[in-house]
Structure formats: structure tokens, C-alpha cells
Length: 159
Image (cartoon, rainbow, N blue to C red; front, side, top):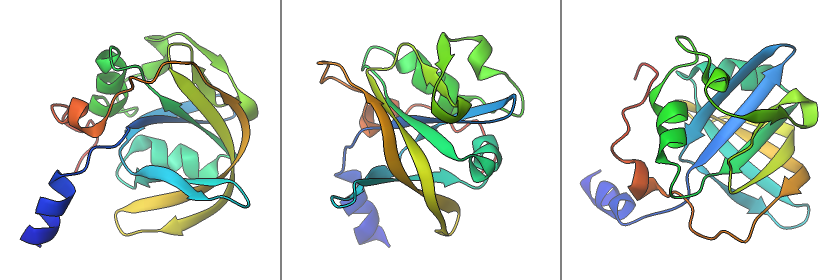
């Protein structure tokens, strides 16, 4: 698969922090695989690693919140991508408010949307969550963190 690895190495796309809540249980992780996948109806898909603590919470949640981070907030990407919710309460370290479905909305995000989980699909080592947007907040900020900005972060969950 060397040719495919070379192809993927050329890509640079936004990374997202996805958050979920079920009752009082909250979780969030850095996601590299995500994007709009339908125009009519509007739909967005996020892929969460099955090894990730957030996967268990997201699998039971009715709503997920997808955040874009400002480029200057590498620290948030490090927290949500480099630390495991099995070991640390990530939300104790950042300002947030409850959003739709109780999912945490990160105060310092450049933009976010909440999506009702329409469907889930097995994608190998990740599960795809198909989302119907229900609420959105955006800013004029266009300089968001991308995959190349976070290649230095070691995943906080087991491989």
C-alpha cells in the first residue's frame, strides 16, 4: 500500500474535536476522518476509533458536537487527541457549556455544529457516525487546525 500511503501524505484537511454525553458521562476526542457527505439532506460523517474512550459514549449518544479549533489552540488538540478519557476528565481543563443533547460545546472552538446521530456504520477499526445538523455556531475565523498541524500528537488511546 506504499502508493496509497504516498497519496494520503499529500492530504491536509481540518481536524475536529467531537464531543458526546449520555447522562452525566461526557467524552471527547480529536478526529481526523470527517466531512460533509450529502447536500440533500445535509449530512456530515465523523469516524471515531473503536479503541477510543469517546467511542463508547458516542455509540450511546443521540447527538454529537463537532468542533473546529483555531490554529493557535494546539493545546486543545493535544488534550483531546493525546489524553485518554479513561485516565483524565478533559472537560475539567477547558471552558465548555452543555449543548444539544447535553453534549459539551467547547467555548474556545472556532466553530461547531451539533448533529443528531442518524446512523452508525462499521468501518473496520473506526465507526462512522452519520449526523443530521441541528444547531451551528460559526465565526469569521478561517485559520483552523489541520492534520499537518497535529502530526506531533501521539494518540492517547491504545493502538
